[in-house]
Length: 266
Picture 1 (tube, rainbow, N blue to C red):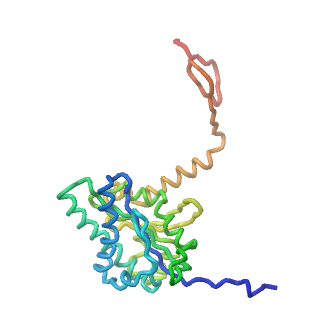
Picture 2: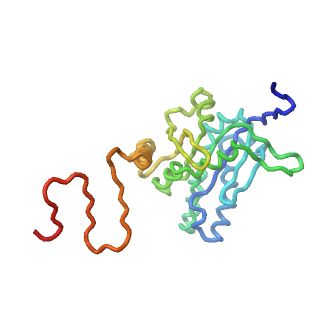
Picture 3: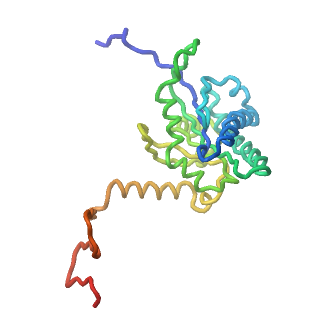
């Protein structure tokens, strides 16, 4: 029989938001300090612009990551955050970029944002324990997934300042169920594999630009998926040879040969 004395209580469900700066390490030390201070500033201002100051002021387990930050909040605010916060953050980043551009074009802040929901065991009152669990870890992992990084790489850095990845749970509970006004058609599903996480997530770009307008997020992601599949599962009959040692003549690989083979002048 199951021993109920060994059961563990499920922690409360929390929304987890994490942001980090693109190419943070490529900046000089003084610029890194400027950007690190700017991240919580622009996030707080975006919450204010989105009429969600109460979410920011009552943030759960806020934590600094050096090149970004993360917070938790009550899941009932998820629809409002999805609808309003990310668009507001894009606008705030654009305004900050115009200000910095007038003084020093080397300083640039583009953010990746990840939003997830799930059980989170929060720190105790004495602060002796850390925020742990797969929900928080996955939220951070998604920021490093190639599709999210590719979105900013393929866009105009003076127009697109934010790329967002939403977890499957956020999509199902908030967008697909109709609680958010943001149409589900505005996000692009994509499969990602990063460290211990593998699954479908949804990309949202408030202000797409550059190659994103030419080919779209979805088309480019299909190309990435096809290339990854081809690399993982080569076509039947394909051959890969490795040559070692010293060789001074031409190297020729032949599948089926009919007739003579001539390598010198005819």
